[in-house]
Structure formats: C-alpha cells, structure tokens
Image 1 (cartoon, rainbow, N blue to C red):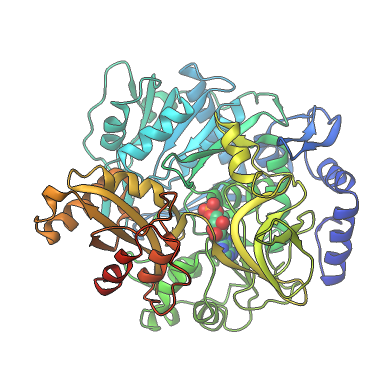
Image 2: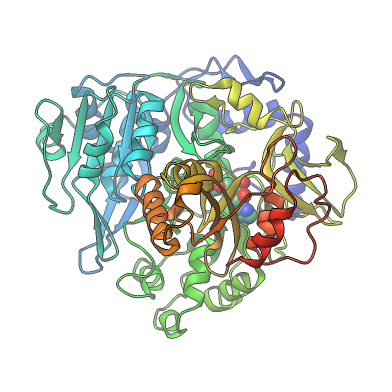
Length: 635
Ligand code: WTA
C-alpha cells in the first residue's frame, strides 16, 4: 500500500489534513510516486474558479494508457486485467491478461489510426459491453483521440445530437448488442442517426450478434477486416496533462445534453487514488463494477481506475435478470468476486425476488460492497448488508457525478464507520460545504443545504464541450468560486454527509440522469400538445419515475386520452430511448405558473408524489384555480 492511501481512521484524518493544508504538495507527491510521466509538471495546480480556469499538472507529459497497461507488463504481464462475462451464461467467459490487453489495444489503436484518426479527433463509441469497447476506449486514449462513449440504450436522435455536438469524425459501433433476451440493432440505429450527421467520415462495425446490417460504401468497414493484420506495437501519443481525454454527455436543465470534458493528467491521478482508497483494493482481488461503460462509473471504475492500479476488473455484458434473477450472484460465485460495486436500483429489484436466487450461489468470496448513482434507502441498504454481505462486508455508499470524475464522498472500506443512507466523509483532497438560500456557507454541523465543493480536485470537469459559458453558468455561478453540485445534502454532528437528492431539474430514474426539459421538448412536439411539465416521483424500485403534466390544444381536447397517452409515450421512447418514458401522463386544463410565466414545479412534484395537504403559499400564482383540478384528477 502506498503511504498516500489511508489504512485506518487515523491515517485517513492525517491524510485529509495534509491534503487540505497543502493540496499541491499532497497531489504532487502522490502523482510523482505513483505514475509514469514522460515529463514532469511546472505547476501542480493553477486554478481560478471564478472563470473557471482549471489546470492540474500543467506542463507535464504522459500517456494514460502507459499507466493503465504498459507499466504493468514487466511484473504482471500474465495477470488477468479484464474478466469478460458474456450476456449468455453458456458462452465462455474470457480472461484477458495485461499482455493480451496490451496487444489488443495496440491493434485497435493502429486500426483507428489507419483511418486517419489523430490526436484531438473525436471518436464516438456506440457499443455493447464487450471487450472491444474497452479496447476502443483505451486505443483512443493511446493515440490521443478523444472518446465520446454513448450508452448503447440511447436512441438514434440522442446519438446524433451527441455526435454532432462533439463533431465526431469516426463512429465505432456493432451490428447489434445483447441485453438479456433482446438484441438491440446498434448498426441500424447508427445509420438512422448518421442521416443527420455530416461530420462523420468513417464507421467501424464490430460483429457481435450476426444481425443483418447495411454497409454504406466508402463509409462503413467491418472491425475484423481492418483489425486482423494490424501490428502488435503502437507508439503512444505524448499528451499534455491538460489535453482532453474524453467527452461524456450528461443531462442538464435545458434540452441540450452537456458534454463534460475530462483531461488526461488530473483525471488519471484521481481515478486511481479514489479507486484504491475507497475499495481498499489488494493485488489479488477480483473487482466487479456492474455499471455500463457508457456512464462515468464505467469510465472511472471499470477502466481507468482499476487498470491504472493493475487490478482485475470484471466486465459484464448482460443484465441482472437474465437468464434469471440470480445472475449477479452466479457471476459472483463463478469469478470469486471480492469487491462488488452496483446501483441501488439493481439492489431494490433483486431484493424483491425469492431469496433462493441469492442463497443458491456461494457468495463467500465477497469482502466489500459498494453502491453508486442515487441515494440508497434504508431497506435496500439493510438487505444488501444482510443478504449479500452476510453482515460481514462494509458497504461503501459512494457519492459523485459525471462532472466530478471520481468518488468524492464515501466511506473507505473497512475504515470509515458506515451509517446506512449516508455517504459519510469526503475523500482526502475533497472539501465539500453546505450553502444556504442566501448564498452563505453553513458552518455549523447538523445542518442541511445545497452541496458545493469549495476547492479544486484533480479530476474535476474542465468545461462543457464547446460551451464554456454554460459550464460557468451551471456550476460556478449560483455560489461564486464554488462548484455547485445540483444536489442537496445534510451533515450530521460528526461531519457525515447524507445526500438528499437533486435540487435542480434532473430526475434520476434507475440510476440514469434524465433532464426533465429534454423530455418536455419531445412531448411538446406531439401535434395535440400545447405544453408539458415533467417531474419525478418516488418509485419503489426505480428510485424515481417520470410523471408528465400535459395541456392540449383546444382542437385536440376531444381526442381519446388513452390513445394520446400511448402516442406520447412511444414518441418519448423512440426519440430519447425507453428509459425516459413517462410512467404517468395527466392531461390538465392549465399548468400552475408564476407571474413571470415559469411553471411552478414544486406544486407538480407534490401532486405527483401524492402529497396534497400542503402546497405552501400559492397566492403568487398567475392561475391558482388550475391547482384544484390537477389535484382531483391526479393519477
Ligand atoms: C446522484 C454517477 C446519493 C446525485 C456517478 C448526483 C447519488 C448524480 C449517489 C450524479 C449516492 C450519485 N448517493 N446520490 N451515493 N451517487 N448520486 O452524473 O444526485 O450519473 O448528482 O454520476 O447521481 O449522477 P451521474
């Protein structure tokens, strides 16, 4: 273990104190000792949060793939880097050693280079959870191309928006992707998306499902045709610490998703640091994060964190319910997983099933459990603790975001005293604070407020791709020179944080961030609709579900509401993907508005959650009369 990674509570407090007293020394010493740099930095930190301009390890040169693969080859070439568990349990799993990973990434990098891709070009990856996705991510990083992974559950429209926003020149996809018993036709979705993307010149298509596809002449090439004869060696591009490593889109409070930009040096340092600290990874552990690489969790804690630490990381193609609800536990037994990192929504779904699904598998290899993506409720936490951890495994409830790049507030496994539903304490280097409505920091403990971070950390997002103004406006304007997370939180008398949920227009459904504005834009496109307001309401398994309040045009009010509901639901599903579908749609005569014309979502949120006894003061509304009929007709 490194001297920078806490091993007990007193070393945690001491490291925390050092990291706050002198962040440059703390991160500079860690970065110097633990990574391979081609050239050292001039400054550890050069940052002005009022702009914000954020630079870590300025002047340094490196390649993150050398740190994730090449440097492990001398001593650990034969160690398993990735265990691939396919969707179908009858298909063999693959153990990919660091030596094999190195060759495969090099061939993939040479393949992408052979199309003309070079440093700074954007490459969109729209792929299933197969090893080639990991190779493609690392191959881009090796040649300095910027990867933009788009989750393979997104629709053609979401895909084309993201390709256009990043002006991707290249797309890598597959004929199809397996998800449980379904096959998603990824290539045909890509074809539809590319009808509105003139920036794309080449598409590489991996064969995975043998789904029939149309190949466009001069644009599309099969992965296997291009890959097989590529050389096994590939020079790594020399990157500046502040060169862009990847773009990853996340939902925001307008319809347009935000392309969060992460850079090479700081991201690498913190993904590694947080992985080792939180999970207390030991060199023979088998670690499994069940997220998809299409989300930040997959970037930081399937790929970059674990591989930079020389770990063995499991990559699972399937879903928890296929072929039956015991699959997660079968995979744990099969690969003797020691550390399991998953989402509260999966835990809640699995806790509903007959317990024999759990008890049929031997879970004795497990020593640490983790959760991420949304607040975990007490019941789910206790089930996870008792049924999966058998009361012996610490649970790390990790709070962080696409924007933060790495875990910010979390217990360190076996070190921090866990408290169900609390993310507990900040990692070394992370300085959270709570702000009140008037913009003042709340310094007392036992308080509740808006969660901000008041000092820079290495893996913070640097900008929104192509829109620095929006970056500043969204994250650095509500509370000047502090990063505003969009979450609310409580802090207990001992400084432990409990995240209470979003305070902005983002709803988290089954761990996916959905921007309500994006869904409203789609509903409003329906010809019968005047306007809509989308809010979240609590759902026992998904955490939240989507409730849409919709007003209709006068000449459409007579239409059959069941038919309209179906049409609107399928429009959303087709445009944004099934995860964004409203679970309930209510047609109303009017939506409650403030005098400045803003929809009062606070009221609609209460109606959707069936909390109808106290709306607070509604006299400031332009049209208070509409509230009563909304309440009466609620679903
Ligand atoms: C929520 C996922 C409570 C939070 C890594 C945050 C959580 C958003 C937790 C970011 C947690 C994530 N407890 N809430 N442990 N982890 N969240 O960008 O609202 O997909 O702002 O990043 O998820 O979601 P994102």
